[in-house]
Image (cartoon, rainbow, N blue to C red; front, side):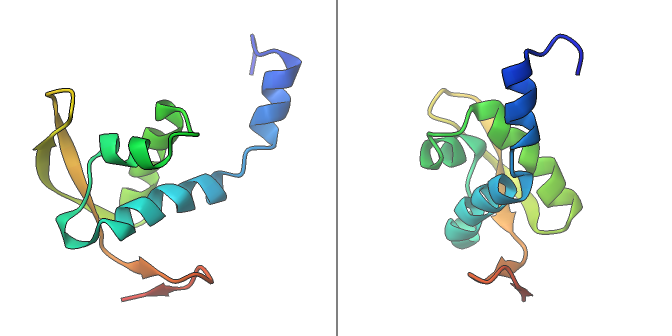
Length: 97
């Protein structure tokens, strides 16, 4: 991690990727069968930078937890992928369906 300040390195080391991935998944899961686009996830998770949200989509897709079901225009006029949860996770973090 060359070029990062010591405070940035410390923040990176203390980032709970599992927690952040779970928050992104929870927003997608809450959207139900209609799914949601990344702009909607960003609105729901305003405290997280956009780049911190979008990097979780690939992991969730590769894990088989979400799928792309089409495209929808964002409020900014650009087409974005619609993500839908393929599996459900309960409050205890257990997969079902």
